[in-house]
Image (cartoon, rainbow, N blue to C red; front, top):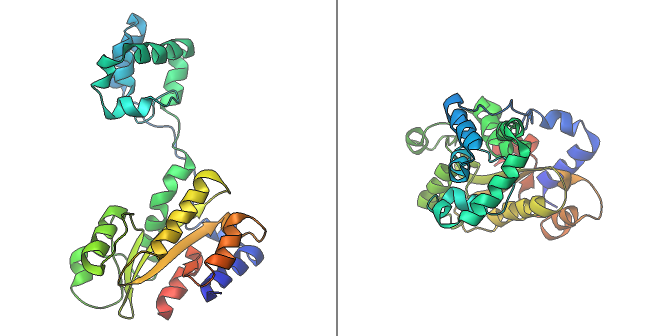
Amino acid sequence: MNRYLELSIEYANQRSYLDDLYSVYPTIPEGIRNIDKQAWGKVEAAFNKGNNYELIKRLLEFDLFPIKDSYVAYLRRDKSSLERNPKTINRLSGRLYEMGLDLIYQKCSEAKETNRQIGPMFRKWAASKSLGLKPCSLEQFVSNNEDAVLEGSDVQLMRFAKEHLGYNHNKGLDLVARFNGKYVIGEAKFLTDFGGHQNSQFRDALATLDAEVDAVAVAVLDGVLYIRGKNKMYTELTEISAEKNIMSALLLREFLYSL
């Protein structure tokens, strides 16, 4: 078994893993979303006038639509579809009138779900020099061959890997670095539970390890996958992927400096 995978499993099962992991993923719920007063005024006006089209149109301008419905994403992406689908607009409006303005406001201003905040947390943690180096700009990164961590969004890091390292995977990256002359790419995930979307996230991270790239590929994984048992994640981790570079973020620094 890969040494750092083995250490990650031991860490998770024997030490204060969750307490320590909180420094990487401080999953503190954000406050309620700010609702622009002027924009909300237009929602109130449409609601009070019973103008279904205007009500849906204005609510789609907010980050969070107040009801979950399979058709909302389509309407949000194609605004012209509002005029072409009056029955859908009326159906959604009926649910909104039942809710009332107070509940609509409450739903529109709900805090972001924790799992939607997890993505940027790893890069924020890395930006605090947790890997021993403060991430640098692209210009600095390519100017020499010294140890460095590249600063950027997941898309920017992916673009660098494609252009400079032959990365052939259409998936954003959370880490591009260079240690002891070796390039490293990685994707970070915090898997909070078993099943469903979390299994997909797990497989996505493993797929990055199989991508063609002129670099050391790492899956920086944390969460329930290290719980010993017969669950699919642990089985795949310890049997199918046992020799791959899979490790907790808490062991990443040690791995990078060992290259």
